[in-house]
Length: 416
Image 1 (cartoon, rainbow, N blue to C red):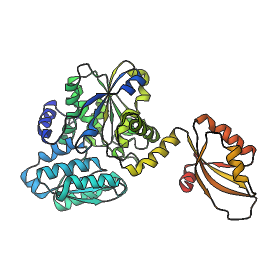
Image 2: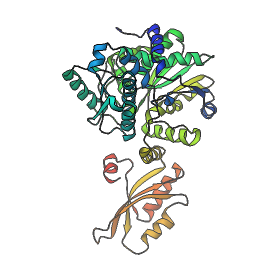
Image 3: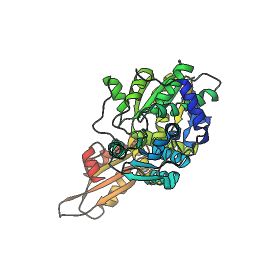
Image 4: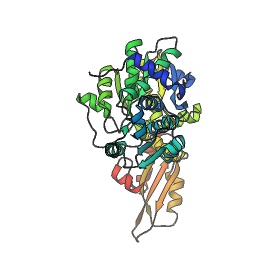
């Protein structure tokens, strides 16, 4: 392996970033500790000034530039958090930046980036994924002779992210048995690996990716850095088609395990953190906590740290987050219901077909012909997953059942 971060370089990075980065708290989670029978701690990187750990790597890299490089200006591509780190760093150091972001980036992240960078940044929305933005940014960077600030595949960036690990070791008196960390491009996981390999080699670092964007896991399984053809962009802070070459080599050798978590599970974790702990996180920020269930047996009685990587969530996404959580929990179900064309059919459906705790949350109907039965798309929220089968049996027995569309993704997407 050609590059592996040195702890001395990460220590130097810690000194460099002091002027802009917070030493974020490591807080015990009473709820999660009780739930898993472990000592679960949250490393609150969501409390950084830019609300994610990305300020660490971005500032460490930009601060290392020569005067000539600073004069030419910098370019970056980001789904949001790295962009905000670069914007903050450039305003602080008075360096011009052009920031490429996917066109689907939540508006909140775009506005925050502009706020942190003020007149020092120019934002370009390009493409549907990080990779689209990255390709456009690289072309512009080459044409304009500017320095590219990579979000993860750069030694200075990796060393900056590794400062999270130094803080963890200073904040704990007992050995850390497990660390759960989200992987997008792998910069944070790589930096943590370097620190703990040197200072606490028995600590098991678990990388966590979205089920719909398992770029690091796939690459490790293939034993080569592999670009995914399609990804689910929902967990935008961790949805990349291809991880870094540097980060792949480090993570392949030094992570204890890499796991994936269903996007719906992540959504339920976001809601639990908000409703039960008053913690606001973005989807990527919830990944590490969402993975705990898969390790429930291994972490019992252990000291566990989850890196809460960011809180740049857009409130307009709340409805989608709730919907995905309900679908994942098998509490929200969509049907094509065939209503008999006679008076009282809808009343019968509500009174006799629905269970006492079932709730209609979506209803789309239009009579287009004089056929005996007319279809409607109906969304029903249940209190318990076990209520589904009896509901379907009642629908069939009374000739209301047309089709169950939760498990028909193409039809579901078209109709709902």
